[in-house]
Image (cartoon, rainbow, N blue to C red; front, side, top):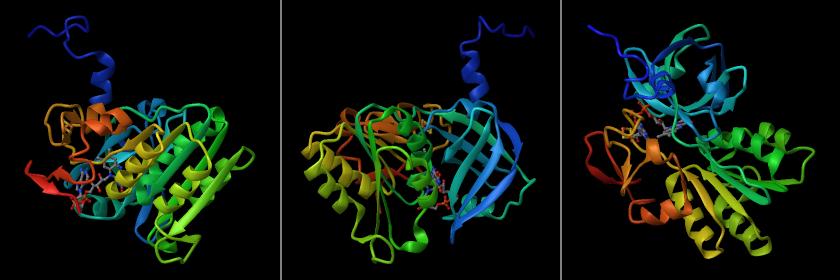
Length: 286
Ligand SMILES: Cc1cc2nc3c(=O)[nH]c(=O)nc-3n(C[C@H](O)[C@H](O)[C@H](O)COP(=O)(O)OP(=O)(O)OC[C@H]3O[C@@H](n4cnc5c(N)ncnc54)[C@H](O)[C@@H]3O)c2cc1C
Ligand code: FES
């Protein structure tokens, strides 16, 4: 059989390599809090990723799941930060340094860093893509305000690392917990609104529970500030083919996972409300 020359291939060569599964060894595992661990490995393509892009992580014999990149270095040293919520994430949590996993990606678009006065709002593992974004923003923005929320002190993530990244630049960090066990006792969006009443922001970036991001969308629309939100949906192919990540007319793996205000407006009936389950059935978001 005649081999396809790169010229006749319908698939751009760079896309082909991004979508090809690479098997890599876990170099290091860090316990972040009671049910979140960070896994570090080396992957050359991930070294070229933009903050906000994600990989598909194959756990042999279990499943393949989407994960944002929580650490990106130009030498390819890459991290993912995983919440133990079900079969695949739990199997990943049982892995040891030296074990192998498979990686496809990086996929999707990343956040677009802008100049000016910017706000970063995260909750739970939503902080994962926001950490490399914040590392990028401190180099381009005039001021960076980070608001991080969690149910309680034990669920907070990356506070030391974000504080460290923000040191030495014009910045602010606000921590909230629902039960008041650390920082301000409230939901994070309450503090966001207080900030927006006092200051004019040029861009807001958010990632976290979808109800929180929907709250951010409502506030951003009210105060006329552009928003970039990183969404989660069921993902299988990660290249825009299978439709499992559909929201309105958009496919989160390809058009996102970071959607801007205009895209969010186009899916506002679904956003914060519905998603497709594993069978493709439209179900209410919990
Ligand atoms: C672009 C993207 C980036 C993500 N980044 C991270 C991250 O940085 N850290 C992290 O911990 N999680 C992240 N997730 C969510 C993660 O992929 C799911 O938590 C994971 O797939 C759960 O798989 P499981 O087999 O452990 O759980 P399951 O046993 O399959 O289910 C447990 C719960 O997770 C939900 N879930 C299952 N699969 C998915 C999926 N593919 N997408 C969304 N929800 C799902 C289920 O509805 C259920 O409520 C991301 C998801 C997307 C789409
Ligand atoms: S995961 Fe298949 S289209 Fe998005």
